[in-house]
Image 1: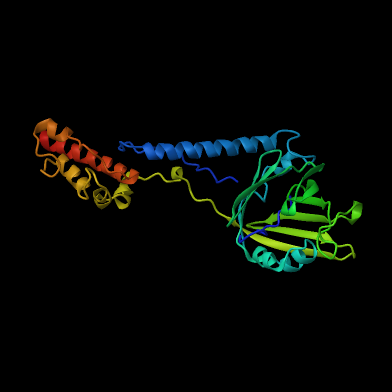
Image 2 (image 1 turned 90 degrees about the vertical axis):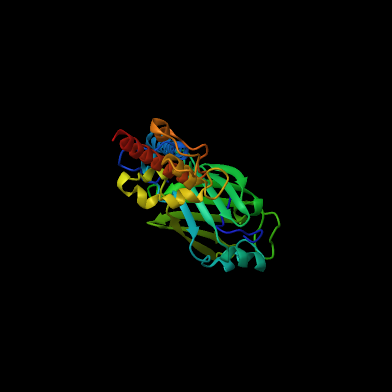
Amino acid sequence: MLVLVAPLGAASGAAASSSAATRWPSDFDTLGQQFLDGVSELGRRAAEAGDALQRLLPGAGSATSAAAHDALPIEGVWKKASPIRGGDNFLDVALGVGWVKRRIAVNAAQTQTLRWTGSSIILDISDKRGTTRHEMVPHGKVVQGKGFMGLPVSRKVWWASKGSVIVMEERYKQHLGGDEHGSPCEGDACPLVRSTRGARGDEMYIEVERKLLNGKVVRMKTLFEKQREKPSALAFIVPRGVRTLLFDEKAAAEQPGDGSAAGGKRSLASLRGGGGGGGARSGDRQCAARPAARPRSPTARLTFAARAKRERRKCEAASAS
């Protein structure tokens, strides 16, 4: 598997946990959407915790100690930052790629996602054609697989620089580039392509090189920028004092409560004893009245429930006086 960091056939971690304890607002009646978001987030964090535990187990991963990989710099989501440096010449003389495909490969957008499982690196490459998944096992042993353009290769992957860089070598079984492109080869005459992947802060680099039959070494290099994960729903706990700044009556009114545009306001009006949502009522029945339908949006439902509870309290206080 030669990861060329760009398509050639067609037009092309863990987020930090919140340190604050989760506290659900007591006056929300409907928490369905928040509950589902919370379950999804907890599942993701549990998977990440399992991966972190695997990295701490003795002998996990490769010949290099797994303890050296407890915080892999290359893990995360990376977006191609610029065209491939030296890509046109490398793809031409080292791999025998045609001009049109070279131009697409050098300039095409691409995103790579890397995740360390404790024994292998899962690499997802996304471009205009879709997403393809690859697995690299850095144990230093030679295995058979498929590389550039699906050609058969003998592959070896290992750690370098104390676990901060991963190196992959692929030896092909036919000539690539030049006059003998596509013809069978034997032994050291077969192309050997080496790729090195590492990260410095928020920048990841991939360097690919090959020594030609004439002894000349050709290289290409691609730079990627790390993409920050969006905060999860659990990261936002809305204080009671600022809730009205985020959820106002207009948001609830814009969602239909009974099939009409004004359904939300009519439902709220019914709790006040008005005639908009079902007529006036008396005593405790009026204060306990609830609308037959609620807004459809999860945000509007939470707003509606909170406002409805406040209206009931005001009503009960007025009745008691």
